Image (cartoon, rainbow, N blue to C red; front, top):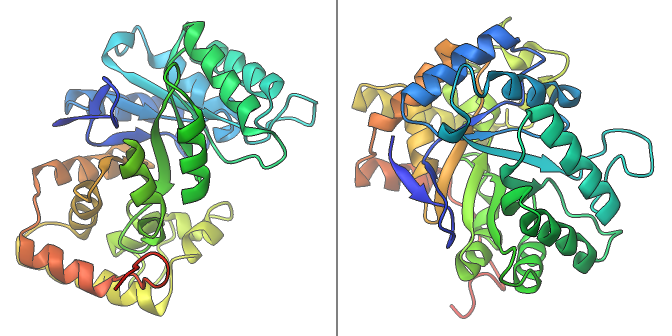
Length: 322
């Protein structure tokens, strides 16, 4: 699998990341092990998790697989903090105390002495950004985190954090929802990331599963859309606009002799500034479909057609002057 530089940092990662949001929930430890082996065997290196996935079980499962099943040094371990885990005073948020408590908890669950990429899961308006960034700097200088990034930041938030982070612990990545169905980040986040040399990681690159085409005629009983936990998550992208985009993706896939999944994933993977889409799978079969996208490069005509059908409306001030 091709490797890419993560922003302006020296860290190189696979251009596809393995997501673990379902680990410990819909995906048990045995299936997670199968996914990790398949991903690493395909040349993947970046594995993304978070301290709140399945109440920490996602991190515990990943930690249990590192060492015996897959060498720790073969994997770039990325996790996140900020989201609330407990009701205690340090159970969530971006204060120094909460972040460092979360950091130690993640290291313990993952069974490692350092994180390769530690990400802020969300902006915390209740905490001065200087305090938050000081915690990131401590994580780097102490050796507990090698690189730091953010997730779900608006353009101004990303630019603010990048400008104030300094050189000891610069922001090297931002993870955002990005797909043919969700291109809003192109208004301000993508330009801000490009200006500050920050690499893009895309969560939900398959439009929360909708771009696979599985929901075109209904809701499969074994899909996330049928799950009480994820139904609302999927329903967000089941709109008339989405249906038109899904049809275009399916048409492109038919013409290329591949799957809609591969087309949708290849589109976002090769967007300007993109380092790696984060793909989550319920089982290894689903993951294999995503890995097949590594063999696909969209022809310019198809890329242009998909751009047009999913076009994003810009206005003032994003496109000024005209």
